[in-house]
Amino acid sequence: MRTSKERSVGFRISELNMAKAQIFAKNLEVTYNEGKSNEFKASRDLNVEIFAGEYIILFGPSGCGKSTLLYSILGALPPSRGQMLVKGDDIYKYEQDQLVNFQRNVIGIMYQAFNLIPSISVLDNVVLPQIFASVDKARRDNRGRDLLRRFGVDHIANKLPTNLSGGQMQRVAVARSLVNDPEILLADEPVGNLDSISAEQVMNTLEQINLNDKKTVILVTHDAKYLPYAHRVYYLRDGKNEREVPNPEKKQIKKVEAGKTITTEIEKLARMYPYSSIEELRVKSLVNYLIEDIDFDQLVILEKAVEDVIKGRMGDNRFLDILNKRIGEGGVGFSKARSEMITKKIFTIMEESRDITRFRSTIDMDLGYYYQSRFVERLKKYTLSEVKIKLSKEQHERLDDFISDRLTGLTRRHEFLLALDKPVKEGGLGLNKKASALISRHIEKLLAQGVSYIIAKH
Ligand code: ADP
Ligand code: MG
Image 1 (cartoon, rainbow, N blue to C red):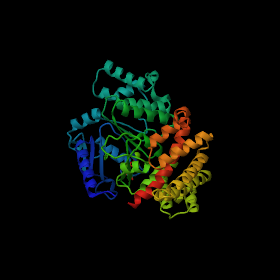
Image 2 (cartoon, helix red, strand yellow):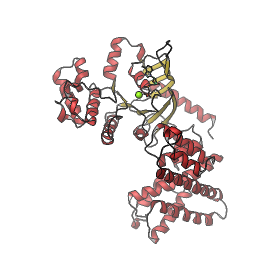
Image 3 (tube, helix red, strand yellow):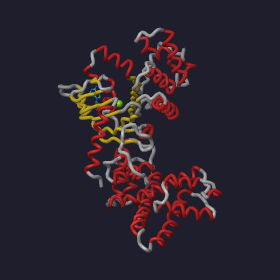
Image 4 (cartoon, helix red, strand yellow):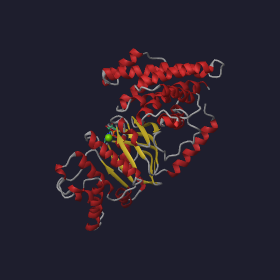
Protein backbone atom coordinates (compact mmCIF):
# COMPACT_ATOMS: atom_id res chain seq x y z
CA MET A 1 0.00 0.00 0.00
CA ARG A 2 2.78 2.40 0.90
CA THR A 3 5.41 3.06 -1.73
CA SER A 4 9.11 3.13 -1.05
CA LYS A 5 9.08 6.82 -1.92
CA GLU A 6 6.69 7.61 0.93
CA ARG A 7 8.83 5.59 3.26
CA SER A 8 11.95 7.50 2.37
CA VAL A 9 10.18 10.82 2.95
CA GLY A 10 9.13 9.55 6.38
CA PHE A 11 12.75 8.78 7.12
CA ARG A 12 13.93 12.24 6.19
CA ILE A 13 11.33 13.84 8.45
CA SER A 14 12.56 11.76 11.30
CA GLU A 15 16.18 12.87 10.67
CA LEU A 16 14.93 16.43 10.86
CA ASN A 17 13.17 15.67 14.14
CA MET A 18 16.40 14.37 15.63
CA ALA A 19 18.16 17.64 15.11
CA LYS A 20 15.44 19.61 16.83
CA ALA A 21 14.42 17.27 19.62
CA GLN A 22 14.68 18.72 23.11
CA ILE A 23 15.40 15.30 24.55
CA PHE A 24 17.06 12.72 22.40
CA ALA A 25 18.05 9.28 23.66
CA LYS A 26 20.09 7.34 21.16
CA ASN A 27 20.69 3.59 21.59
CA LEU A 28 20.51 4.18 25.31
CA GLU A 29 21.46 1.33 27.59
CA VAL A 30 21.41 1.58 31.39
CA THR A 31 22.96 -1.19 33.46
CA TYR A 32 22.52 -1.61 37.21
CA ASN A 33 25.34 -3.30 39.11
CA GLU A 34 27.55 -3.35 36.04
CA GLY A 35 30.19 -6.06 36.07
CA LYS A 36 28.74 -7.77 39.14
CA SER A 37 26.94 -11.11 39.28
CA ASN A 38 23.60 -9.31 39.68
CA GLU A 39 24.19 -7.04 36.68
CA PHE A 40 20.89 -5.96 35.10
CA LYS A 41 20.15 -3.98 31.95
CA ALA A 42 17.07 -1.91 32.75
CA SER A 43 17.15 0.12 29.50
CA ARG A 44 18.14 -1.59 26.29
CA ASP A 45 18.75 0.16 23.02
CA LEU A 46 16.20 2.89 23.69
CA ASN A 47 15.60 5.54 21.06
CA VAL A 48 13.41 8.39 22.20
CA GLU A 49 12.81 11.86 20.81
CA ILE A 50 10.81 14.40 22.77
CA PHE A 51 10.06 17.90 21.57
CA ALA A 52 9.72 21.14 23.51
CA GLY A 53 6.11 21.56 24.61
CA GLU A 54 5.14 17.91 24.30
CA TYR A 55 3.23 15.96 26.93
CA ILE A 56 4.72 12.48 26.85
CA ILE A 57 3.67 9.41 28.79
CA LEU A 58 6.05 6.52 29.47
CA PHE A 59 3.70 3.58 29.82
CA GLY A 60 4.21 -0.04 30.68
CA PRO A 61 3.96 -2.69 33.41
CA SER A 62 5.84 -2.47 36.67
CA GLY A 63 9.57 -3.12 36.25
CA CYS A 64 9.72 -2.35 32.52
CA GLY A 65 12.16 0.53 32.98
CA LYS A 66 9.96 3.64 33.08
CA SER A 67 11.61 5.21 36.11
CA THR A 68 15.03 4.23 34.79
CA LEU A 69 14.39 6.21 31.61
CA LEU A 70 13.07 9.15 33.61
CA TYR A 71 16.18 9.29 35.82
CA SER A 72 18.35 8.99 32.73
CA ILE A 73 16.75 12.16 31.44
CA LEU A 74 17.37 13.78 34.82
CA GLY A 75 21.10 13.17 34.47
CA ALA A 76 21.17 10.73 37.38
CA LEU A 77 21.97 7.42 35.64
CA PRO A 78 25.04 7.38 33.38
CA PRO A 79 24.39 5.10 30.39
CA SER A 80 26.47 1.98 29.85
CA ARG A 81 26.02 2.55 26.10
CA GLY A 82 24.48 5.20 23.87
CA GLN A 83 23.74 8.83 24.55
CA MET A 84 21.28 11.13 26.26
CA LEU A 85 21.15 14.57 24.69
CA VAL A 86 19.09 17.34 26.23
CA LYS A 87 18.88 20.58 24.26
CA GLY A 88 21.67 19.23 22.10
CA ASP A 89 24.08 18.61 25.01
CA ASP A 90 25.30 15.22 26.14
CA ILE A 91 24.32 15.75 29.78
CA TYR A 92 26.63 12.97 30.95
CA LYS A 93 29.60 14.94 29.63
CA TYR A 94 28.69 17.91 31.85
CA GLU A 95 31.11 19.14 34.52
CA GLN A 96 29.70 18.97 38.04
CA ASP A 97 28.57 22.63 38.11
CA GLN A 98 26.93 22.35 34.70
CA LEU A 99 24.99 19.31 35.89
CA VAL A 100 23.88 21.14 39.04
CA ASN A 101 22.70 24.04 36.93
CA PHE A 102 20.87 21.66 34.60
CA GLN A 103 19.07 19.86 37.43
CA ARG A 104 18.27 23.13 39.13
CA ASN A 105 17.09 25.27 36.24
CA VAL A 106 16.33 23.17 33.17
CA ILE A 107 14.55 20.19 34.65
CA GLY A 108 12.17 19.59 37.57
CA ILE A 109 10.92 16.31 39.00
CA MET A 110 8.09 15.08 41.20
CA TYR A 111 7.59 11.63 42.66
CA GLN A 112 4.80 9.35 43.81
CA ALA A 113 5.98 9.81 47.38
CA PHE A 114 5.66 13.54 47.87
CA ASN A 115 9.04 13.84 49.62
CA LEU A 116 8.05 16.89 51.62
CA ILE A 117 10.14 17.69 54.67
CA PRO A 118 7.78 17.36 57.67
CA SER A 119 9.57 19.76 60.00
CA ILE A 120 9.41 22.90 57.82
CA SER A 121 6.41 24.83 56.50
CA VAL A 122 4.69 24.14 53.18
CA LEU A 123 6.07 27.43 51.83
CA ASP A 124 9.64 26.55 52.84
CA ASN A 125 9.24 23.16 51.20
CA VAL A 126 8.24 24.84 47.96
CA VAL A 127 11.08 27.35 47.95
CA LEU A 128 13.74 24.92 49.16
CA PRO A 129 15.37 24.63 45.72
CA GLN A 130 15.74 28.41 45.75
CA ILE A 131 17.28 28.41 49.22
CA PHE A 132 19.96 26.13 47.78
CA ALA A 133 20.35 28.53 44.88
CA SER A 134 20.68 31.46 47.36
CA VAL A 135 17.77 33.49 46.02
CA ASP A 136 16.85 36.20 48.57
CA LYS A 137 14.01 35.45 50.95
CA ALA A 138 11.45 38.06 49.87
CA ARG A 139 11.80 37.06 46.24
CA ARG A 140 11.62 33.34 46.79
CA ASP A 141 8.66 33.62 49.21
CA ASN A 142 6.76 35.65 46.65
CA ARG A 143 7.44 33.10 43.99
CA GLY A 144 6.42 30.27 46.34
CA ARG A 145 3.16 31.96 47.31
CA ASP A 146 2.29 32.65 43.68
CA LEU A 147 2.64 28.99 42.85
CA LEU A 148 0.69 27.82 45.89
CA ARG A 149 -2.10 30.24 44.99
CA ARG A 150 -2.13 29.00 41.45
CA PHE A 151 -2.66 25.42 42.56
CA GLY A 152 -5.28 26.38 45.15
CA VAL A 153 -3.22 25.61 48.26
CA ASP A 154 -1.99 29.05 49.37
CA HIS A 155 -4.14 28.90 52.51
CA ILE A 156 -1.87 26.20 53.93
CA ALA A 157 1.41 27.98 53.17
CA ASN A 158 2.40 28.32 56.82
CA LYS A 159 1.31 24.88 57.97
CA LEU A 160 3.53 21.89 58.39
CA PRO A 161 2.95 19.33 55.64
CA THR A 162 2.10 16.56 58.09
CA ASN A 163 -1.64 17.07 58.28
CA LEU A 164 -2.40 17.67 54.61
CA SER A 165 -4.40 15.38 52.35
CA GLY A 166 -2.56 13.43 49.65
CA GLY A 167 -3.94 15.69 46.94
CA GLN A 168 -2.77 18.82 48.78
CA MET A 169 0.69 17.36 49.32
CA GLN A 170 1.05 16.47 45.66
CA ARG A 171 0.03 19.98 44.62
CA VAL A 172 2.65 21.38 46.99
CA ALA A 173 5.13 19.02 45.35
CA VAL A 174 4.13 20.31 41.88
CA ALA A 175 4.72 23.86 43.10
CA ARG A 176 8.15 22.88 44.41
CA SER A 177 9.13 21.23 41.12
CA LEU A 178 8.24 24.45 39.29
CA VAL A 179 9.80 26.98 41.64
CA ASN A 180 12.92 27.40 39.50
CA ASP A 181 10.82 27.61 36.36
CA PRO A 182 12.30 24.57 34.57
CA GLU A 183 11.58 23.88 30.90
CA ILE A 184 10.98 20.20 31.47
CA LEU A 185 8.90 18.60 34.21
CA LEU A 186 9.36 14.92 35.01
CA ALA A 187 6.72 13.11 37.05
CA ASP A 188 7.10 9.54 38.29
CA GLU A 189 3.65 8.02 38.97
CA PRO A 190 2.62 11.29 40.65
CA VAL A 191 -0.98 10.23 41.25
CA GLY A 192 -0.31 6.59 42.09
CA ASN A 193 -1.16 7.12 45.77
CA LEU A 194 -4.11 9.48 45.39
CA ASP A 195 -7.85 8.93 45.44
CA SER A 196 -9.52 9.45 42.09
CA ILE A 197 -10.68 13.03 42.70
CA SER A 198 -7.28 14.25 43.91
CA ALA A 199 -5.66 12.31 41.09
CA GLU A 200 -7.76 14.12 38.53
CA GLN A 201 -6.95 17.51 40.08
CA VAL A 202 -3.24 16.79 39.91
CA MET A 203 -3.53 15.47 36.34
CA ASN A 204 -5.36 18.63 35.34
CA THR A 205 -2.67 20.71 37.02
CA LEU A 206 -0.01 18.94 34.96
CA GLU A 207 -2.02 19.48 31.81
CA GLN A 208 -2.23 23.21 32.57
CA ILE A 209 1.51 23.33 33.08
CA ASN A 210 1.93 21.79 29.65
CA LEU A 211 -0.71 23.88 27.86
CA ASN A 212 -0.42 27.28 29.53
CA ASP A 213 3.17 27.33 30.68
CA LYS A 214 4.34 25.46 27.56
CA LYS A 215 6.51 23.14 29.59
CA THR A 216 7.50 19.73 28.36
CA VAL A 217 5.83 17.20 30.65
CA ILE A 218 7.06 13.62 30.86
CA LEU A 219 4.86 11.42 32.99
CA VAL A 220 5.41 7.84 34.05
CA THR A 221 2.33 5.71 34.65
CA HIS A 222 1.14 2.13 34.37
CA ASP A 223 -2.50 3.20 34.27
CA ALA A 224 -4.16 3.41 30.83
CA LYS A 225 -6.82 5.86 31.91
CA TYR A 226 -4.27 8.70 31.86
CA LEU A 227 -3.12 8.09 28.29
CA PRO A 228 -5.53 10.65 26.77
CA TYR A 229 -3.59 13.47 28.47
CA ALA A 230 -0.50 12.84 26.35
CA HIS A 231 0.48 13.96 22.88
CA ARG A 232 2.39 10.75 22.51
CA VAL A 233 2.89 7.56 24.46
CA TYR A 234 6.00 5.40 24.57
CA TYR A 235 5.08 1.81 25.41
CA LEU A 236 7.99 0.22 27.27
CA ARG A 237 8.51 -3.46 27.92
CA ASP A 238 11.59 -5.25 29.29
CA GLY A 239 13.62 -2.05 29.07
CA LYS A 240 12.82 -1.60 25.40
CA ASN A 241 10.65 0.85 23.54
CA GLU A 242 7.97 -1.46 22.19
CA ARG A 243 6.03 1.14 20.25
CA GLU A 244 5.32 4.84 20.05
CA VAL A 245 1.74 5.99 19.69
CA PRO A 246 0.55 9.53 18.92
CA ASN A 247 -2.77 10.48 20.46
CA PRO A 248 -5.15 11.17 17.55
CA GLU A 249 -7.19 13.56 19.70
CA LYS A 250 -4.28 15.99 20.20
CA LYS A 251 -2.62 18.26 17.74
CA GLN A 252 0.82 16.79 17.29
CA ILE A 253 4.02 18.73 17.93
CA LYS A 254 6.31 16.08 16.56
CA LYS A 255 5.87 16.04 12.80
CA VAL A 256 3.64 13.35 11.36
CA GLU A 257 3.12 12.92 7.64
CA ALA A 258 0.61 15.38 6.30
CA GLY A 259 -2.46 13.44 5.22
CA LYS A 260 -5.06 13.89 2.57
CA THR A 261 -8.77 13.98 3.35
CA ILE A 262 -9.62 11.88 6.33
CA THR A 263 -12.89 10.06 5.96
CA THR A 264 -13.12 7.29 8.48
CA GLU A 265 -11.47 6.66 11.78
CA ILE A 266 -9.45 3.82 10.29
CA GLU A 267 -8.07 6.13 7.63
CA LYS A 268 -7.35 8.70 10.30
CA LEU A 269 -5.61 6.07 12.38
CA ALA A 270 -3.72 4.92 9.30
CA ARG A 271 -2.20 8.37 8.99
CA MET A 272 -1.32 8.45 12.66
CA TYR A 273 0.22 4.98 12.65
CA PRO A 274 1.62 4.72 9.13
CA TYR A 275 3.42 1.45 9.79
CA SER A 276 0.59 -0.42 11.46
CA SER A 277 -1.21 -3.04 9.47
CA ILE A 278 -4.91 -2.64 8.75
CA GLU A 279 -5.61 -5.36 11.31
CA GLU A 280 -3.72 -3.47 13.99
CA LEU A 281 -5.65 -0.30 13.20
CA ARG A 282 -8.95 -2.10 13.42
CA VAL A 283 -7.96 -3.52 16.76
CA LYS A 284 -7.09 -0.04 18.05
CA SER A 285 -10.32 1.40 16.80
CA LEU A 286 -12.48 -1.24 18.43
CA VAL A 287 -10.56 -1.44 21.66
CA ASN A 288 -10.54 2.28 22.36
CA TYR A 289 -14.23 2.39 21.58
CA LEU A 290 -15.08 -0.20 24.18
CA ILE A 291 -12.58 0.26 26.93
CA GLU A 292 -11.35 3.16 28.96
CA ASP A 293 -10.13 2.03 32.29
CA ILE A 294 -7.63 -0.83 32.08
CA ASP A 295 -3.93 -1.30 32.65
CA PHE A 296 -1.14 -2.28 30.30
CA ASP A 297 -1.25 -6.04 30.75
CA GLN A 298 -5.01 -6.16 30.33
CA LEU A 299 -4.75 -3.98 27.24
CA VAL A 300 -2.22 -6.29 25.60
CA ILE A 301 -4.36 -9.39 26.22
CA LEU A 302 -7.49 -7.64 25.06
CA GLU A 303 -5.89 -6.33 21.86
CA LYS A 304 -4.60 -9.78 21.04
CA ALA A 305 -8.05 -11.33 21.57
CA VAL A 306 -9.78 -8.67 19.45
CA GLU A 307 -7.20 -9.23 16.75
CA ASP A 308 -8.03 -12.95 16.76
CA VAL A 309 -11.73 -12.15 16.46
CA ILE A 310 -11.12 -9.75 13.57
CA LYS A 311 -9.02 -12.33 11.78
CA GLY A 312 -11.77 -14.89 12.30
CA ARG A 313 -9.61 -17.07 14.52
CA MET A 314 -11.70 -16.76 17.65
CA GLY A 315 -15.40 -17.23 18.32
CA ASP A 316 -17.60 -15.54 20.88
CA ASN A 317 -17.38 -18.23 23.56
CA ARG A 318 -13.63 -18.19 23.76
CA PHE A 319 -13.53 -14.41 23.58
CA LEU A 320 -15.99 -14.15 26.46
CA ASP A 321 -13.92 -16.62 28.41
CA ILE A 322 -10.73 -14.57 28.01
CA LEU A 323 -12.43 -11.35 29.06
CA ASN A 324 -13.86 -12.98 32.13
CA LYS A 325 -10.84 -15.04 33.20
CA ARG A 326 -8.66 -13.65 35.99
CA ILE A 327 -5.60 -11.58 35.13
CA GLY A 328 -3.08 -14.02 36.55
CA GLU A 329 -4.60 -16.76 34.40
CA GLY A 330 -4.13 -14.95 31.12
CA GLY A 331 -7.50 -13.22 31.11
CA VAL A 332 -8.53 -9.57 31.20
CA GLY A 333 -10.32 -9.89 34.54
CA PHE A 334 -13.59 -8.18 33.63
CA SER A 335 -16.80 -9.03 35.46
CA LYS A 336 -19.17 -11.51 33.84
CA ALA A 337 -21.66 -8.79 32.94
CA ARG A 338 -19.03 -6.51 31.41
CA SER A 339 -17.51 -9.42 29.49
CA GLU A 340 -20.88 -10.40 28.07
CA MET A 341 -21.72 -6.83 27.11
CA ILE A 342 -18.41 -6.32 25.32
CA THR A 343 -18.57 -9.70 23.57
CA LYS A 344 -22.03 -8.91 22.30
CA LYS A 345 -20.92 -5.52 21.00
CA ILE A 346 -17.81 -6.81 19.28
CA PHE A 347 -19.60 -9.63 17.53
CA THR A 348 -22.50 -7.43 16.47
CA ILE A 349 -20.08 -4.91 15.01
CA MET A 350 -18.27 -7.69 13.15
CA GLU A 351 -21.59 -8.89 11.72
CA GLU A 352 -22.70 -5.43 10.66
CA SER A 353 -19.34 -4.56 9.17
CA ARG A 354 -19.40 -7.66 6.99
CA ASP A 355 -22.66 -6.34 5.53
CA ILE A 356 -21.09 -2.94 4.90
CA THR A 357 -18.29 -4.64 3.03
CA ARG A 358 -20.75 -6.57 0.93
CA PHE A 359 -22.64 -3.36 0.29
CA ARG A 360 -19.57 -1.40 -0.67
CA SER A 361 -18.43 -4.00 -3.13
CA THR A 362 -21.79 -3.90 -4.97
CA ILE A 363 -22.15 -0.14 -4.97
CA ASP A 364 -21.20 0.29 -8.62
CA MET A 365 -23.66 -2.25 -9.90
CA ASP A 366 -27.13 -1.50 -11.17
CA LEU A 367 -28.57 -3.07 -8.11
CA GLY A 368 -26.69 -0.53 -6.06
CA TYR A 369 -29.46 1.88 -5.32
CA TYR A 370 -31.99 -0.70 -4.25
CA TYR A 371 -29.43 -2.34 -2.11
CA GLN A 372 -28.38 0.95 -0.61
CA SER A 373 -31.78 1.98 0.66
CA ARG A 374 -32.40 -1.38 2.29
CA PHE A 375 -28.97 -1.34 3.74
CA VAL A 376 -29.36 2.17 5.14
CA GLU A 377 -32.61 1.08 6.73
CA ARG A 378 -30.84 -1.75 8.52
CA LEU A 379 -27.93 0.38 9.62
CA LYS A 380 -30.35 2.92 11.01
CA LYS A 381 -32.47 0.39 12.83
CA TYR A 382 -29.46 -1.18 14.41
CA THR A 383 -27.96 2.17 15.42
CA LEU A 384 -31.19 3.47 16.92
CA SER A 385 -31.70 0.30 18.92
CA GLU A 386 -28.17 0.64 20.28
CA VAL A 387 -28.49 4.31 21.25
CA LYS A 388 -32.15 4.06 22.30
CA ILE A 389 -33.53 7.20 20.70
CA LYS A 390 -37.07 7.59 19.30
CA LEU A 391 -37.59 9.69 16.17
CA SER A 392 -40.58 11.17 14.34
CA LYS A 393 -41.46 10.06 10.81
CA GLU A 394 -39.82 13.15 9.35
CA GLN A 395 -36.68 12.61 11.38
CA HIS A 396 -36.57 8.99 10.21
CA GLU A 397 -36.61 10.03 6.58
CA ARG A 398 -33.93 12.59 7.11
CA LEU A 399 -31.73 10.19 8.98
CA ASP A 400 -32.03 7.78 6.02
CA ASP A 401 -30.70 10.50 3.76
CA PHE A 402 -27.92 11.48 6.11
CA ILE A 403 -26.74 7.89 6.58
CA SER A 404 -26.95 7.28 2.88
CA ASP A 405 -24.83 10.35 2.14
CA ARG A 406 -22.30 9.38 4.73
CA LEU A 407 -22.17 5.79 3.53
CA THR A 408 -21.48 6.77 -0.03
CA GLY A 409 -18.87 9.27 1.05
CA LEU A 410 -20.90 12.32 -0.03
CA THR A 411 -20.57 13.83 3.42
CA ARG A 412 -17.74 13.66 5.87
CA ARG A 413 -17.79 12.72 9.49
CA HIS A 414 -18.19 16.22 10.92
CA GLU A 415 -20.83 17.13 8.32
CA PHE A 416 -22.85 14.09 9.29
CA LEU A 417 -22.56 15.04 12.94
CA LEU A 418 -23.59 18.65 12.21
CA ALA A 419 -26.65 17.46 10.32
CA LEU A 420 -27.78 15.45 13.35
CA ASP A 421 -27.29 18.43 15.61
CA LYS A 422 -28.94 21.08 13.47
CA PRO A 423 -32.54 22.12 14.27
CA VAL A 424 -35.28 20.43 12.20
CA LYS A 425 -36.32 23.82 10.81
CA GLU A 426 -32.89 24.24 9.30
CA GLY A 427 -32.95 20.86 7.64
CA GLY A 428 -31.25 18.95 10.43
CA LEU A 429 -32.39 16.18 12.71
CA GLY A 430 -32.69 18.40 15.80
CA LEU A 431 -31.07 16.01 18.25
CA ASN A 432 -29.23 17.13 21.34
CA LYS A 433 -25.43 17.07 21.36
CA LYS A 434 -25.20 13.85 23.31
CA ALA A 435 -27.57 11.91 21.07
CA SER A 436 -25.88 13.23 17.93
CA ALA A 437 -22.48 12.27 19.22
CA LEU A 438 -23.70 8.78 20.11
CA ILE A 439 -25.21 8.14 16.71
CA SER A 440 -22.26 9.57 14.86
CA ARG A 441 -19.79 7.55 16.89
CA HIS A 442 -21.73 4.41 16.25
CA ILE A 443 -22.07 4.89 12.51
CA GLU A 444 -18.40 5.81 12.18
CA LYS A 445 -17.37 2.63 13.97
CA LEU A 446 -19.42 0.54 11.58
CA LEU A 447 -18.12 2.40 8.55
CA ALA A 448 -14.55 2.18 9.75
CA GLN A 449 -14.72 -1.56 10.27
CA GLY A 450 -16.42 -2.14 6.93
CA VAL A 451 -14.23 0.17 4.91
CA SER A 452 -11.03 -1.39 6.13
CA TYR A 453 -11.77 -4.54 4.14
CA ILE A 454 -11.74 -2.46 1.01
CA ILE A 455 -8.50 -0.72 1.93
CA ALA A 456 -6.93 -4.07 2.70
CA LYS A 457 -7.76 -5.41 -0.75
CA HIS A 458 -5.73 -2.79 -2.59
P1 ADP B 1 9.41 0.82 36.43
O1 ADP B 1 9.58 2.25 36.83
O2 ADP B 1 8.92 0.64 35.05
O3 ADP B 1 8.58 0.04 37.40
P2 ADP B 1 12.27 0.64 36.96
O4 ADP B 1 12.88 1.52 35.95
O5 ADP B 1 12.17 1.16 38.34
O6 ADP B 1 10.86 0.11 36.44
O7 ADP B 1 13.09 -0.71 37.02
C1 ADP B 1 13.39 -1.49 35.89
C2 ADP B 1 14.11 -2.75 36.29
O8 ADP B 1 15.36 -2.43 36.85
C3 ADP B 1 13.37 -3.55 37.34
O9 ADP B 1 13.50 -4.91 37.04
C4 ADP B 1 14.09 -3.22 38.62
O10 ADP B 1 14.05 -4.32 39.51
C5 ADP B 1 15.50 -2.96 38.16
N1 ADP B 1 16.13 -1.94 39.00
C6 ADP B 1 15.68 -0.70 39.24
N2 ADP B 1 16.53 -0.02 40.05
C7 ADP B 1 17.56 -0.87 40.30
C8 ADP B 1 18.75 -0.76 41.08
N3 ADP B 1 19.06 0.36 41.71
N4 ADP B 1 19.55 -1.84 41.13
C9 ADP B 1 19.24 -2.98 40.47
N5 ADP B 1 18.14 -3.14 39.72
C10 ADP B 1 17.29 -2.10 39.64
MG1 MG C 1 8.90 3.22 38.54
